[in-house]
Image (cartoon, rainbow, N blue to C red; front, side, top):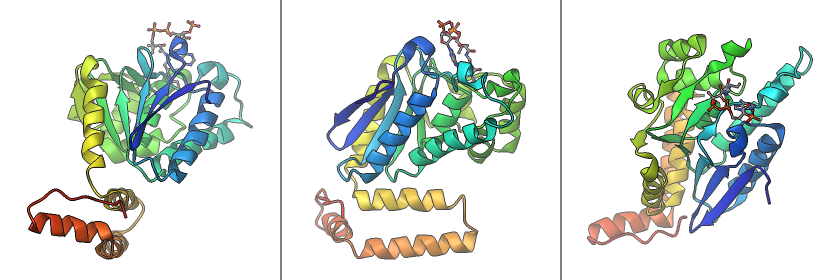
Length: 258
Ligand code: COA
């Protein structure tokens, strides 16, 4: 049981709600700890194939908890950033697709949390921004590294230097958001997308995720090696035999996820 998160288990996936709506889901130490714990469990839970992360109330997350930030000093700031980065890494590396359903403000650490997710779907009410310069700091939960990888250096710099918010349509235009929906359709459409993923062989889904994430870390030649190895391993799986047989027999595949 978590105090700052609400976890709904569904068939094959989980929906995680950030649940401090009175504080716009600001990421305090407890919420970070609970997210870390949850995503380690998700990584080890073979019955979970996908995750949707969203926020209760009018925010996705309005950033790191500024009351906690205010107490930092030159001795504690670096480890604070490492701690948050570790949580973002645990989400990104959990091995299953994680989709942020961004219902409202995704600012500072909230935007970084959305960036640690693999896909971002947004409601038309969502607002994104990295306003840390307004507080005399820079993003510390991965924003300076993940944002430019998603939207390019110039646009990342524009957001991080100005601290200005952008709306969902702008976020979609720059590639920060994959899809935009009216607020009342956001969860339904995100779940519909997850259902689409659940119809695939999950060994392939998870290998695809690993390979694309590896692309950020590896040279092209090492990345191509990584891809070929993963492709080869999948060619030895029951799901590959089933998927190709089903196509040839003009029927739907029945994957065993192995
Ligand atoms: N940390 C701690 N508390 C936060 C918070 C944060 N990042 N963001 C919002 N809150 C709290 C507010 O202090 C307020 O608490 P209170 O009711 O006890 O006073 C509550 O959440 C509601 O926020 P409020 O500012 O009243 O809502 P609003 O609709 O007027 O404004 C925002 C919304 C998002 C524009 C505004 O809350 C904001 O600018 N938040 C900080 C964003 C930020 O700089 N994040 C980066 C942190 S690294």
